[in-house]
Image (cartoon, rainbow, N blue to C red; front, side):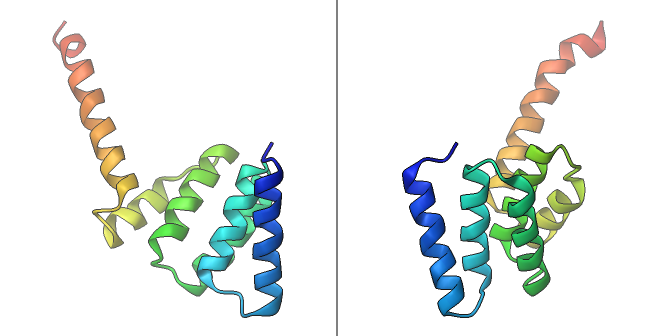
Length: 112
C-alpha cells in the first residue's frame, strides 16, 4: 500500500522533522503518509502528539477521526470536539449531510 510517491513524501517529511522543529502540520503530514502506507498505529501516535501541541487544530482532529475509524476505535469524542471548535469543517458538514439522508431514508420504515 502507498507506493513510491507516498514513500518519497514520507522521507521528505521525515527529513523536515529532523532538520526543523516538529510542528503540528509536519506531524499531520507524517501521519497521513503512515495512513497511506496502512500503518495506522504509527499515524495515531503522531496525531496524538500533534493534538497535545494544539488541541484545537482542525486537521489534526479530522485526521485522528479517519485514523481511528481505520483502527476500529470510537470517534465520538473527536467528532464532538471538531463540531464544537470547527462547526464548518468539511468532515462535520459531510457527516451532517449523511445523518440527514439516513434520517430521511428510515422515515418510511418508522411509520410502518
